[in-house]
Amino acid sequence: MQIKKVAIIGGGTSGWLAANHLGRALKDRVELAITLIESADIPIIGVGEGTVPSIRQSLQHFGISETEFIQSCDVTFKQSIKFVNWRDKHKHGEGNFYHHLFDKPYPFNGDLLAQLICEPSQHFADAVSLQHALCESHKAPKLITTPEYTGVAGYAYHLNAAKFAKLLAKNAIERFNVEHIHATVTGATFALDGTIDQLQTDKGPLSFDFYIDCSGFESILLAKQLRVPFIDKSHQLFIDTAIVAQIPTPPESSIPPFTLATAHQAGWIWDISLTQRRGTGFVYSSQHMSHGLAAEKFDCYLGGKLAEVAHRQIPMKVGYRQQFWAKNCVALGLAQGFLEPIEATSILLTDFSARFLAERFPYDRTQLEYLAQRFNETVANAWERVVEFAKLHYCLSDRVDSAFWRDNQREDTIPENLQQRLNLWQRFIPIAEDFPSKFEVFNLDNYQYVLYGMGFEAKMTAGLPACVPAWQADERFSRSKQQWLAQLPDHRTLLNKIHMYGLQAI
Image (cartoon, rainbow, N blue to C red; front, side):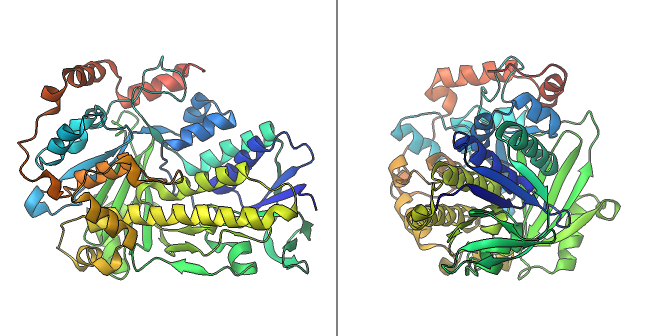
């Protein structure tokens, strides 16, 4: 039976990302129709305001103008995540920090890289990239004359999630002829072979050949109807609750070109600057901190303003589904699972999974079993690698000021594959071959910034001479850094110009 009618259940970022990926990849299959079903009764979570650099490729692939995107979604540039107080303040000082940058480290040779790694007093990111200085100076990653989706430095975006979903919807409907209907899905009926036959909705039954579940935490089809089990990861990643609030900012205020992630005794706080407000969230482990104390500490971080702004508490079920593709249904976004907001992993996995599904979308039902097996293996591997990378931030910390940090350092809470990698890297510098799968969503560069930003001790550096400053090691590196610091505009200044004049179209 040929697949001609596809339903996406749920809007928001995940639903409309799926609609654009499928619409773009399948535009030549004229017999295929895509319908997105969105309920007016279910609000969008709308707190995922950070992205990773790969989103630029997707937006360009969809045919969306970067200028329109920036102008319509309150966009700011994101060049890094700045981690503050993730190390012991008594050893490293109050306000200690490191950057996980979005640029590749400068390609020093192995011996010099080892020397850079061995010097704990120097910021690794500053020694290997000009982007550290750009971030600390609140510089933009490009010029107004730089073409769309390209930059002097690597970047992603901060954005208004609700406005982003609307832009994606507009593009999918106008460019790829995706049908958009409003209905609330309440259940499903099944064919004799166990596949979904019809959706039950408040508007009556709706029948399709293939279903994509983007219904968020509720996971209406994969969890509730197909009853796919959940793999709990709360024994490895403890964060399970968030309090979120949006704080207005003055129009002339400086805009940091990075996500600020400030650690506290039972988790951390995200702080994302958009053009007119800050998106903030206090994430914590409810096993290590009471909800009342969490609200008090968040209020303290916000300068006593929590009661003055709308805020809400969001519980998080930590883990993912045992399968992401069952029968004729695939789950994307929060319907797949959720870990925590660190490193913007949710939108990363959504974009990755939606793109992979679109590239290997079945023509008929005879292909379902094989494609489902391949999709499940690939996406499960991606989820496990994301669990490991998220855990890396916690288990490397030398903080011992609370049970939360001590528990994160216990070996029984660290994934086995991560333990093996850490043992290897104590003797050998990490290399690209340590990440053999093309489906690794975090690679060598990402690990280097976190490992050496956190002061990871590698025994292979013992006995090496004192670190050679980067500007002595390579004069070209130093000259380039100074030149771009002088040439690149202030972050807000560039954004104001983009709103006035736009960027160069490619």
